[in-house]
Image 1 (tube, rainbow, N blue to C red):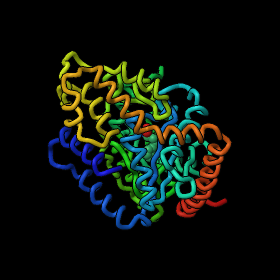
Image 2 (cartoon, rainbow, N blue to C red):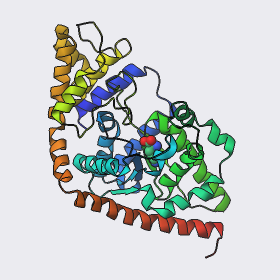
Image 3 (tube, rainbow, N blue to C red):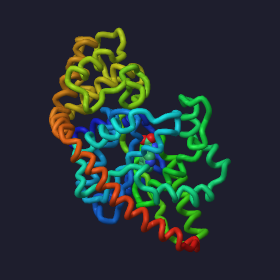
Image 4 (cartoon, rainbow, N blue to C red):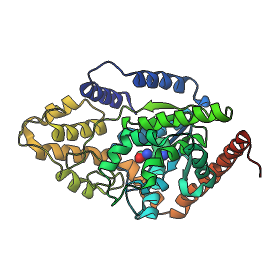
Length: 364
Ligand code: TRP
């Protein structure tokens, strides 16, 4: 990410929260300094649910940051969290298609299989086995208190809340701890899960001996991009611009975005969320200040704004989309990347499970 983009993001963050940094933000800033100074000490674990195509919100929020960490020399593990898809729905639809899509996005953005490990839950049995001892380390009351789980239950499309909904944060602890990940890049909504991971690691170590690190959160300065319907951008809500969309699809999606009746375009996220989110998107793509971008459009109204955004997105993503199309023409290669990542993840998971067995005193 360039300095201009970072500046644009911090401008937004400052507008959104004009308060003193929280302890989590301070710890995260210190961690960022260590990552740059001594990347070899860190293993990052991060992941996505394969519930739809990755979009511009992911791109500016997390995907760029993964590639940046990889290029710094940090060991990066990227999980396609296929078992986690079943938390808020009864069946996992189009899993294969979405998994291919995530792989294409990762490769197109610069995730390098020679340096980073891409894998999925369902292919790594030893990871999943860690769930059993980990579940014994948390109380039902703790599981019920998790604010992110509560929010997901409120928005769930399931007829009844499943056991996986309450326990997937413990599974997520296994995602992070199986490879002894010590850094997890997260948005605010994932902080309760990371806290639980730290708790699981600490309790395991206290009870059985030192096996796991207590991982730290690397908070992303994710810009607040809204979906085209003015609500939270989400890969399963069809309100976002997928990275892999064509220029025409991009134009159509942006054309349909919610704006307001004031023809004078300004950047004011609190008073004008729809318009400002579009301005911000253009600013991020153009690596410019959002206020300047808004001032230039002036009284051109929503139509001029949307033209600016569409052109900015399409030209910014052109090289990524060109690489994505090349990989899409060679799915055999793309899937071999996942297979190789799974092999590596399995070796790591089995070694950790062996340590767990030894610590717990089980015999085979
Ligand atoms: N919960 C994350 C999401 O919904 C995906 C995920 C699964 C994850 N396991 C993880 C993220 C471990 C970070 C670490 O996007």
